[in-house]
Length: 321
Image (cartoon, rainbow, N blue to C red; front, side, top):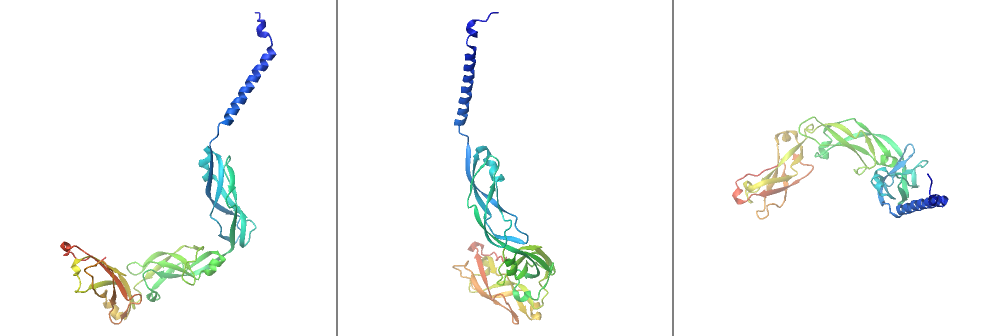
């Protein structure tokens, strides 16, 4: 077969033209892709600060808990930034005292770190101390006077306190706070707290164990008892049958004195309470009618508050919680 001369003529030029056309098409396609904006994010996130290489027997007592990190990158990576971003400060070689250190950030691949806000942070380092303390017991709802005569046992009798040297030295007492229940010989699990000379809790300390087992006998002292308070209402006010609720604060008091008298007393009465018929809900402070030979060391008065029913319901008796 014979090929037409028009086809074979200028083959090199035609090949060059095809190559040029292909190159122009590739360049045009690339420019189009580059001209199409890629969705990006630009955000500031809070991340926890990791303090690395703290020296042995040292503890950091003051440092920021978090830092702000400004990051940007492709939109599809935004959801992974918060969970994969880390910030840390290297404390290697730092001794007790105040230091200014640099915060470094680690972000996921493909995400740009714009900056760390406040990248230079102050850090305070103190010596770490461990000490043994005996456990004292405080009983909620029982005053200081009868507390000294309670039969109280704590197990274990000592705990270990760990923390900054100054905080450990500030702790003067370790107190287990127990709540007494009904009956004798109750055993409860009580948390322990470190207290200073003024009875304030000392912060920044670790205690091992954090709780102790306390056995207490609230009736062990024959010279003191915890008794309920019953209000007595004056006949000059509204009848007690018109009260739907009676509240007494406190509703129990510690009574101390002659064991023979204490054994016969089941409750402590108040002086006559006169309720204002025009304003029955107004709290009334009233003295306690303590039998002769006994005293109430914690309080001499209680507060009584009543609620009255409408006249048609006046036959209902009061409810004393």
